[in-house]
Image 1 (cartoon, rainbow, N blue to C red):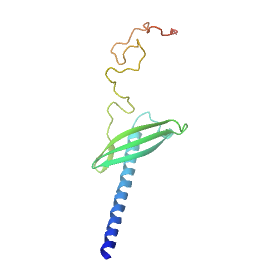
Image 2 (tube, rainbow, N blue to C red):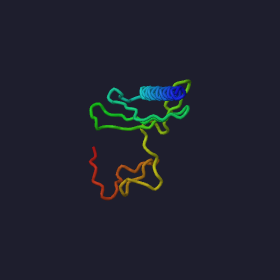
Image 3 (cartoon, helix red, strand yellow):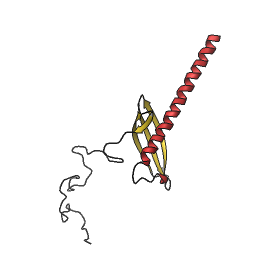
Image 4 (tube, helix red, strand yellow):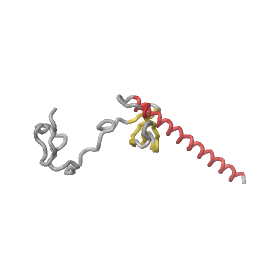
Length: 141
């Protein structure tokens, strides 16, 4: 009977410690994301609500899914994925390649552009008078 009681107490203690560590990690990851966003120029964080929807911690690395919701329009939402690394006992967001909010890289051979549209990212833009066939006329200012 005493062995069972000790085993139950040990299990309860282990679960409590694990839950506490998880809660601390989630709070620390949220703080790291908030610090990172505060350092980004031209972001109006006062106009948005930030929700960390999930956190996965693996040793010294973590991943966080974050949802942003505009305070003026609750339907205006955006989700971002952040990779974090623990440095000196603190979580830090890893810089994203391509910058914050950058789009996906182009897929070879895929295009959502209308027929006759010049390729995006070309080194030389088309002349101002070149329009694809069927394009409505553009008024000059």
